Length: 240
Length: 49
Image 1 (cartoon, one colour):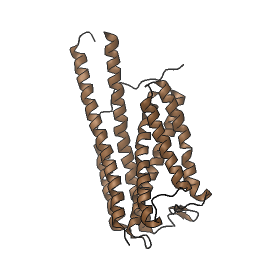
Image 2 (cartoon, helix red, strand yellow):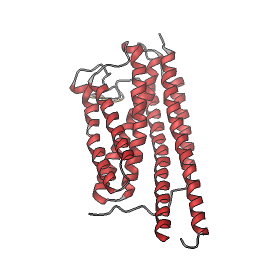
Image 3 (cartoon, chains in turn green, orange):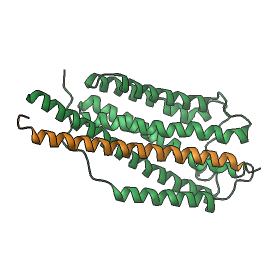
Image 4 (cartoon, chains in turn blue, orange):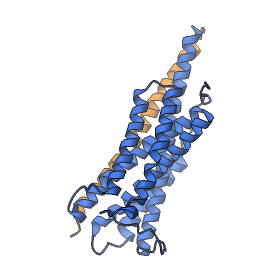
């Protein structure tokens, strides 16, 4: 049985002020584009602007779970603790954004559909995704640290990702309440929306992606600090 | 009808969630860094280790 390798004794202590300021500037630009530049949608009114938070949150959640998938595969292949750290961190950040998707969606749905929730394919499969990654984090929290925990988590991380194509295609495969894709249609990219709306959405998507990298950096650093403390404690224990 | 209350609620959830999570991570990082520094200092003071 191959042992997983611990990362080097460092904690990535360098702050990332450039990323912090870049993210803050991008979020401010996104807020400006959403509330000052993008026009108000004719039928839904102001509440349609929730889309500029809802879609980027969904994008970041899917991207984060894709990173979990890739890192889980790499962990099973290389047995390097570093990949397990990245998978764990990305799952937590992804679950946070998936939670925001499941909160902002119903807040938009209530005035537009007249109900908070319907059990249609898109909404249900997104809830299933949330439950899978909540289970992933609970599995990690309840298991003893070590290579077995990392291996089980990697399998859940890989299998869980299979739900994302189902979510994406659910609005095409089944009749759903959820709006059809407007950003990418058969006629091209951004043809289903007015240009200022596309611009605002793109800025918001960029800002949320930067936010993902900022949160990931902090979460990875936390895990590496924990590892380093454990390593020093073990060294101290064995030296006596 | 503009339903500004819903827009405000969605905004409030998004930003409060993100800011809470970010500050919790920063706090936990700071606490662990402090623990690590203390542990390193203890190891340096202890000649056996």
